[in-house]
Structure formats: C-alpha cells, structure tokens
Amino acid sequence: MSQNPAPADVLVVESLVRRFGELTAVDGVSFRIAPGETYGLLGPNGAGKTTTISMVAGLIAADSGTVTVAGRQMTPRAIEPKKHLGLVPQDLAIYPELSARENLLLFGRLQGLGGARLTSRVAEVLELIGLTDRAKDLSKEYSGGMKRRLNIGIGLLHQPTLLILDEPTVGVDPQSRNAILESVEALAVEGMAVLYTTHYMEEAERLCDRIGIIDSGVLQAEGTRDELIRLTGGVDTIRIGGSGDVGAAAEKLRAIPGVERVDADRHSATLAVRDAAALVADVVSTAADLGVKLSDVEVSRPDLESVFLHLTGKALRD
Image (cartoon, rainbow, N blue to C red; front, side, top):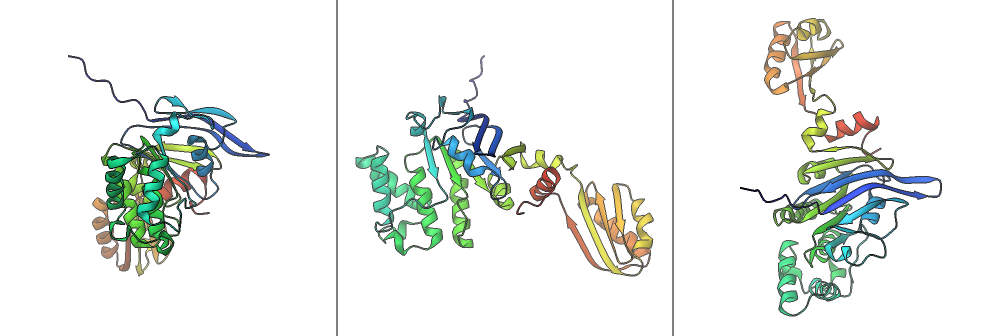
C-alpha cells in the first residue's frame, strides 16, 4: 500500500546573495520551510535578516541565488508567487485615519476578497489578533502593540501559504508582545508556514520549529533548538559560592562522575557537567562535607545565546 507523498516545501531559498556596494549583506543563505512549520531567522540587528526576507518577498532582487514560493520562482516582477505570500514588515503599514475593521476591509479588497467571505474573514482576524472590542476605533488611537497586531492581521487576512514576520514585537509592551506570540503560535496549528525574524532568543525558542542563526549575512547553522544546542557540546553549568575554601574542594568536585571541568577560586566554583539536574545534589553535599558553607547555587543549561556565542564569538545583542 503506497503512502501519500510528503507535502512540498512552501519556501525554498537557495544560495541567496545580495550586495550593497562593497558590503555583502547576505552571503549564500539557503533554507527551506515546510507547511505548518515556523522557521526563525535569529541574529542581531544588521545580521542580514531584513535583506533576506526582502528578497524572499520579491521586494528586491538577489544578485544571485533563487527563491521559490509554493513551487513558483519569486522575483520582483513575479505576480503568481506573491499571491501565496503575506508580509508583515517592521514599519507599520496601516491607515491611521481608518479603524481596524476599515483597514482590514480595505486591504482585503486589495487582496481580492469580497462579499460575505471578506466580512467573515475580517471577523476571524479581529478575534485572532485580539482587537474585536476595538474594531471600530481609529487605529491612530491604538497603542503601539495594538498597531503591531493590526499589522499582522492585514498580512494574514487572505490566508497566505507563507507568512513573513519581520521583528514583529519590536517596541511593544509585554502584554501586546505576548498576544502577538500567541497569535503566531495559532497560525502553525492552522497549517500556515511562517518565516519569523527576531533578535530575541526567547521568542525563537518559544515559537520556532527550526531556527537559522544568521550573522554578518551568513547562515552560521540551522536546526531545532536541541540540534543547535548540541553544537556547543550540550554541557550544563553548576555554579556554587560561599564561605570556606571552595577552591580547595575543587579536586573532590572534579572526581564526581559526570563532572567534566571545574574552574574554582577561593570562594566560588563553576562546574561543567553533563546533567546538572542529576548532579547538583552530589555537588552540594560534597562541598558541604568539605566544610564549605554554601550561600549560592546556580544551575544553567545551554541556550540559543550560548550557541550564538559558540558560533560567532560574540553575544547575540552585540
């Protein structure tokens, strides 16, 4: 009995290059996004994220490389692939003198929707972005976070196959930021492919099925969160501090099975371990048995910030 073939990738990016004079802003970037997948481009400001999505959306031409959306090649002149695309730019693209409902109705008509279908879709989007109660208010009266949410609603109104979100939470309050993230999480459940750019590690970890780490225009690595973290060796850290000679206890701490390295001075020690949760009790009891009175115990696991530092030699927000 034959199996149904896997759905084709919604987006295929191959070896994209874009130069601005002497600056190579994007240098050989390649990645793919499947239906229902949220793919994050994670990197600091100036890493090449916005230039990459500008080429993906057909806003600017690549110097070399290709972009295929829903099986059709994307270029600035291409019409067909853009029908499958929803773009939410960093800069707000709304009419401040119109209400949320009026903005959505206007952009819906521009996207080819009409009649009962448009009315129904506007109501669905208002609910998704949490603006139903403020639908009749002029958008110029909205908070920054509400304007961002309306911006997202416009991008997904026509139910695109691929939704591109470029730093959608920049400059918004925590409540609106959480509402935006919840909206994005709901889109993947509906089967929409999402390309999400951010320099916030916690957003990438929360939202993205796979993550591409980009810096200086180069895709340094990509994979699931766990796959990327394995690039660092997957080592956890236990830090202890207190009174007594912590440094003198270093040799005993190194002898604990699972401890790979100990860096210690007189009053503190940092242990690199394979499984911090399993070892922290042994570390604490060993230190106590050696006369150390602990005042501080900190356990940390590698995260995407660790991966970025490992790959680039600098912090994500540098």
